[in-house]
Image 1 (spheres, chains in turn brown, green):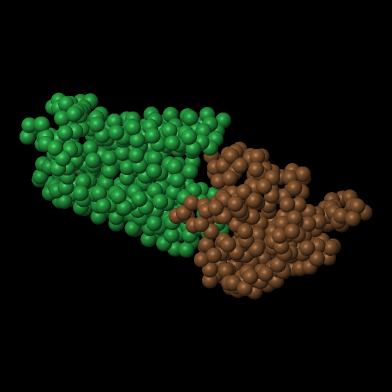
Image 2: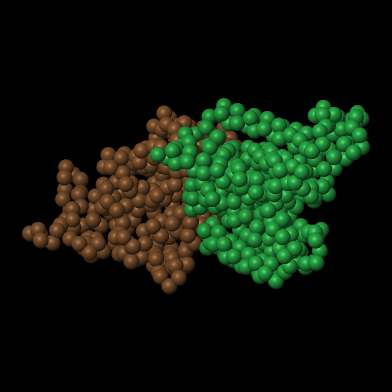
Length: 259
Length: 345
């Protein structure tokens, strides 16, 4: 579904992403992990088509992103940034409806099928009762649910999310990730996300890609990657994996308490 | 302030704005040093459309048809254009302080007008080709701003605004130099022009600016939905399918062209482009699909009413229109900021 072929991204003399090749299957969830400055945000911006790679190609569903216009691309891949902007005074329904702009265009009002798609997403994500609320006045969890709804309203096969659970409490983190998991399982959505929380990344993800200094240093199942030596090396700290009720939990260990 | 406006409220505001426009039109035609009954003025205007016949004397008819009517119409066009240009600039630059002069229109027009005026330093009046050079100066400045800050693939609204600041500074310094080299009379003429006025309005000046204003206002109003998409940020707007560069180019071109045409005809009139969209935003919410069309009508009404004040408050002499809009605009702007602060508290 998503193929990155030797993708490199430079900003001036700095190489942000170096020679990354990935194949992500349709209907799967691939999470990019890595320490701060590893190039995760840059990589997902390339996958979302927002940054043109300096070298290499990104192909989604057989189509090269760099050869597509914005509107066609928006019907193929949706993007949720780390800090989405929610304009003050825009209702939840208006905000989610932005996800349909690629279908009806900016010169036309949403059509019946666009309104139906928005209504469907609002219902699926249990946002019906908020539809006339000011999106900017929602709590962090509700707001992130609304942003996710906007991306799902785009009805794309692929959704790219950059740190979608930043700033949320544990319950709302789980809530958002469960929603995504459900979309992957029931609708065949392909998810490419970055996450800082290694435990949650391992719990929800089919595949982890560990990025360090712009390069892929480990790529595999969550089980393998969170137990790899490369993980601790990349983060520059000691990590232990503890199994709690069948869930792998990644725990950092303080230097003076190592046994 | 932050709660979304209901459809009923939007309709009420639109209706009230339309009424304000009608009141402004009537006052613009009726108020003046020569008292002429309203009904007879309307009869005279209708007679110019080939319906019925005027009951005014030829002098009264000239006052209405050659002085007040073109002045009122030019005021409508100027107010509508400046207000909608301010609104679109605030949308495309996502900056509430953006006004139609942000990208160098004012500095360019000022330099163009100064070139025209100091060129004939011995003349006591403002030369007739001043609007042409003002328009040319405005367009050169905006084009230069675009070439410096808006052309490359990496350009953002921030680079465009910074380029506008640089170009404005350059043109303003050139204008200052020219003024420093010229006579006191031409400096006075430059300032008369810079302060803005509808006193020299004629049907000719109306006909010159009408095509620019109509096309540019329509383009700006139609951009409302695109500006709503851009309100989530440029990257997100692109991810939603919007060609941000194209929208930015079209909107900036339309706003600048229309503003340049208006500035060349009436000089620099400040505050309309800032306060009108802000007032409308307070009343109907943040959607540019509502703000822009209502700003067109509100701006037109506001400027004609301001001009009525400008030509009556110190009659028989006139206050510069730019002074009146600033005197009204500055406290209104402070009030808007206070309301916004309370809304955010």
